[in-house]
Image 1 (cartoon, rainbow, N blue to C red):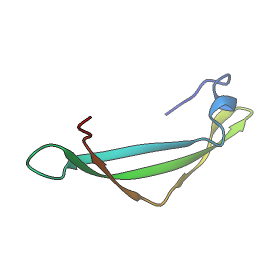
Image 2: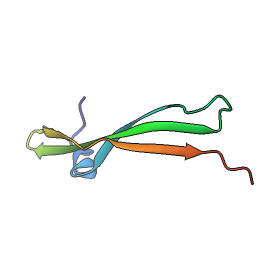
Image 3: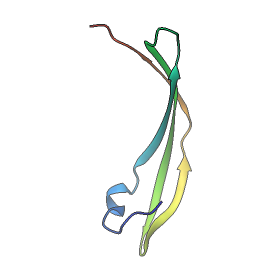
Length: 67
């Protein structure tokens, strides 16, 4: 994964994430998932990724609203 030099300052210190979801029931109105974040650190000269830290996975659950 690479970023151009002008993009690096915009991303430095930001968290990025993956969200894995699956159906929690047969009705299709609930989703279970895991939020897995990553924190990127960059160097500027030359622009490159210095480190990637994995954040603790967090469980997530969504329910369909019937408004």
